[in-house]
Every structure is written in structure tokens, then in C-alpha cells.
Length: 597
Image (cartoon, rainbow, N blue to C red; front, side, top):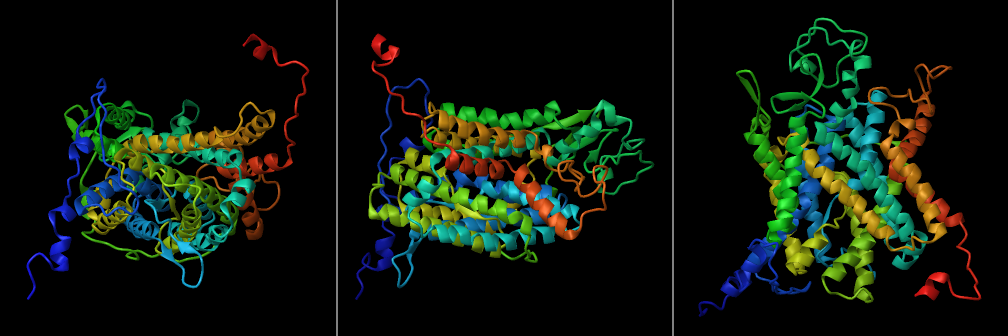
């Protein structure tokens, strides 16, 4: 006879197991900026058995903390590099990214021992994985070069995925090298430069989205007074001209790519078309920044953990209730056609790509995997600090090895699953610090939430309907945080050292310069092979056009030189290796400053 309340199910569903006695007020009540009272919150260690509701809520916070950064790389690549008008493809990329990140996060938090070896897969702490920003410029540049060479955009994306499959073995190999040796090979001076260059390059891209969209930004020169009379605007006034509408005559320069509105190259936001940098577009993006500040001033700890997604949806709401009116005709900044077009549910491989290989992207991808390797070591150390665990333990060394292996293996599997490479996310360390919850169960719950949001494709539909200018307000904030992470890393070194300052000046000088003016080496949009630095065709090429082999070499060199973190990181590695240490100054008397003291 079974006594009620003693079965495993009854024991699992007790109030203590389900809800517990957690102080929800400390987590959810707003902050009063002038208050001097201190909140008291319980601390949950990484192996604590926390109630199901607490795990679900904590996991949801981690999900919302990473979802803004998680959806950005696949959305940007699919929309601006692969298929500008294929909304379903963009939605699938977002969904696949969410599902993959969810599965990889669960594996990473649980940690699995590799049979017959002392090695593990996963960190065994609350450490989440997601699509990495580091690979975004490599994918954009590679796909752009292949498209210009006549490769179908979807096939170009498949070639990038195939190249990732090969290059991911670098991080798998590095996972078996002791972390101390890796740090000696690539000290904070080098890794800080790499991360700062990534952040600087991406922040510029974020501003392009903020002004109306990256494609729109790069063809806005056609509105310049010096070029305007050469562009074939003519009598083109229809907003859907770029989609195949009627065109009467063209001048010397095609007005597309881009939307043509009233004789100008414009950006689309819903039914509205405005020139790049219009105050309406900038204002919608700025609404995201306003909400970020308000959440930081008045938000509860839970709201601060979810500040990016709250600010994004606030900007989305503002865009949704806004209209652009000319006379009696009003048009909306947000339309529901993309949401209606989204599938109800989806999963991996609902869309597939033909895998291939693209040689010119190998070196940039290897640099990217090296950078993410070193970032992961720092991120896992930050997780241990936030979790109040010792970094001088064997468990920490095991987490580093398992985390790097997880990054490499999951990036490999992500490419198999049609997604971009995955790596450890650092912003979730702040969630642990604010909530005082380091339990791995919260990480597993986060993974479950991500899978849930990915499978229900209407979520992707909602995200894909957000105007580019609103996405830009969010991504600019996210991207500049990448730069700040690099700045924090560089701050670990002695910046009064002449040698260190020389390394920084040379590597950042070229890295930042290329981020600001990429066309010193790279081709301009829709002008493949014409860069004066290494022309393959066009007015600067005196011989016949490049052969296929020459184009491959040329593309590799141009991609390396025009990718800020590639050229900046390599210069930092070289300068760090060849520059001698600072001179040791011998004095009979202490410096004058010390005498005055």
C-alpha cells in the first residue's frame, strides 16, 4: 500500500520543491535612486538544489540577458548579406540560433566526463553559450566577396559553414593545452587589443543600423550633391521600385540597391521610407537608449538583468504606435506581415545549405577562434568569481578545459545545425552577481527557455518585424560593451610602460583605422575587385582581370587587412614578441616626486 505523499512524484511536487520561500520582493521591487537601504538576497551555490519556480525565473533572466546579443549575428548576416527580402530565411536563422544556444547551454552547465580520459565536456558552472559576435565581420566579408564573384548568397553562407567545420578544430586542440601556457602565449595585452578592435568595428556597424540600415548607409552617397545628378532617379517616385516596380529611365548610376523614394535613396521601416539618418529613424533608435537609462535608474534587479530586451521591446512599442504622415496619408513604422508570415513552429534543418569551403576566410576564422578561446578563459574565471568559487582549484582547471572543448565542439555542431559558431557569453556574469544565484539548474532552465522560444517561430516573426533603426539602438549598446570588455582586459597591464604603449599604439592604430576607413584596403559595396590596393578588375587594373586563383589570394589578403581584429591582433602578437622589455632605471636618489611626498 502506497501512502499518499511518499511517491517520488509527490515528493518532487512539494511546495518547498516547487516554490520555496524565496524573497521575491528583493528581486522584483523597483530601485529608488536616493534610497540608502541595502537589499538582502539569498545566495545559491552552483550545486544547490533550488526550487523549480526559482530556477525557471532565474533562467528566464539569463535568457533575456543574452537573447538580444544572440539573435543579432544571424539576423544581420541573413538580412544584410544573404537575403535582404527573404523574411522566412531571416526568421529561420533566428530560431535556429535560439535552439542551438539552448541545447549547448544545457550541455555546458551539466558537464559530461569523456569516458576513458581525464577530460570533460562543459564547464559545470552557470556558463551559457550563444552565437558569437566575433565571427560576424568574417561572415559578412566572406559572403560579400563570394556574392561579388557570382556565388549564390545561400551557397556562400554554406561555404562559410563548411569552413567553420574545419577551423573549429583549432579551439578543440587548444582546449587540451594548459590555460597558463595559453595566457603566456597570448597575454592580456594581445587579447585586449583583439576584443577592442572587434567592438570598435561592430559599433560602427550598429550606427549604420541605427540610421536606417547598413545597406542603406552604404549607398547613401548617391544622395550627395556631387553625385545626385548622375544617379538615375528621374521620375522614380514609387516606394517599391527596388522590389521590381516600374522604372522609366536610368542615368549613369543605378539608384539601387536601396529603396527609392521621391528621387532619393532611402531606408525602409515598415511602410515608411526615409533617407538614411532621418530624425524619425534616429529618434526611434534613441528610444532604446532612453529605456536603458531608465531601467538602470529605477529598475529592479530582475529588470536590470533583462535591460537589453526590455529596452528593445520599448523601442519596438514606440515604433509600433508611431506613424509618418504626409498630408492626409499616414504610414506605419511596424507592419504585421512578417509576423503573419512566420510559421507556428520550426526546428533545425527546416532550411538547409549546401556545405562548401572558402579558403580566403580560413585565416580570419582561425584568428576569431583564437580570440574566443582567450575570451572564454576570462569569462569562466568571471563566472567562478561571481559564483564565489576558487580559481585556484582543480575544478577550475577542469572547467577551463571543458569550456574550451565545449566551445569548439558546439561551434562544429552549430555549423552542422546551420548556425554560426557559438562561444561563452560574458554578460550573464552580471546576472549572477545581481541575483546571487549561481546554481547550474538556472543555466539548464535558461537553455530550456531558449529552445522554447526557438521552436515557436512566431517569436522569430516578432523579432524580424522590428525596424532596423530600433535594432541599431540595441546593437550599438551591445557592440560598444564588447569594446569595454577589451578595455577592461587591457587595463590589467601596466599602461605607463613604454613597451606596452608601443604595442597598443601600433596595433590599435591600424585596427581602429581600418574599422573607421575599411575602404583603404577593401572594395566598396557592389564594386568587387576594384580596390586600388589590390585591383582585380576596373580602372586601376592595367592587365587582364584576375584569374580564379589570383582572386582567391587577393580575397584572403583583402579580408585580413580590412577586418579590424585580424590585422590588429596579428600586429599585437608580432610587436609583443619582438619588442624588448623596458629599461630598468638606476638612481642614486629617489625620484623628485617621492622626495616631495
